[in-house]
Amino acid sequence: MLTNWLRKTTAPLLIPECHLCRLALDKNSPFGVCTACQAWLEHGYRCACCGLPTLTPVEQCGQCLRQPPPWRKLMCVGDYRFPLSDAVHQLKYQRQFWQAPRLANLLATKISEPAPLLCSVPLHWRRRWLRGFNQSDLLARELARSLNTHYDPLLFARRRATPHQQGLSKAQRIKNLRDAFTLNHPPNQQHVAIVDDVVTTGSTIRHLCDLLLDVGVQSIDIYCICRTPEPKDNQG
Image (cartoon, rainbow, N blue to C red; front, side):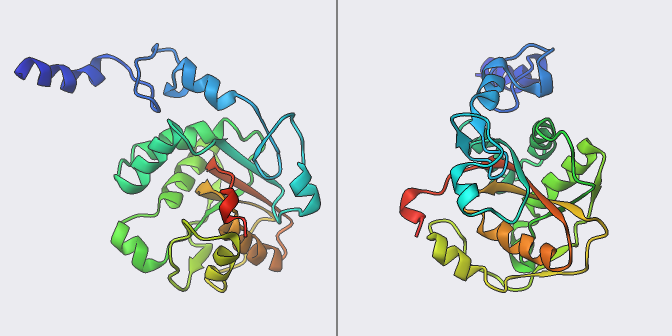
């Protein structure tokens, strides 16, 4: 029994593991990610504008051409599914803060021309007090460090608490977020990127984009770990 405990305790120290799937990997693997996970992250194409999967590389998919989003580009690491979803969940709900720099480093590899100013999706003070941290803030801080760019943690504030967005239809999400955010001060750059952990319908970041556009920001990018198509039954 003691031998088994020692094996489980010391194995991670002796054998390098993939940051995502926890399988053993070669010491020279880039970014601490195994070959299988790296292939999964690089598989397929995405719309450069909304970040959703496409059959071919396009600047704007059909949906973006019909209804252009208020941002210029959306960059993500991958879809919200294993193993990426596990890493996000561990950061957000299990307080495994070491996931933040790992995920931010993976996201940084997807960004060739970073915005000069990053900001993050804010939490209401009550939810942040209960949770103890804002995962989007942690990711933005690490991403700014990786990209060697600036981060303004106080650009936005959430002025009223809102119910969780999960499970709400698109129309319900929009109504839920009405007047939920405010801009503390105009940004000192015309090109700004908003950082979040997961983007589904984009309702939250649309509200934040509107606030930036209202004060004259010219270009907005979205940087997120996971981009997930909204469920068909939630597209009301």
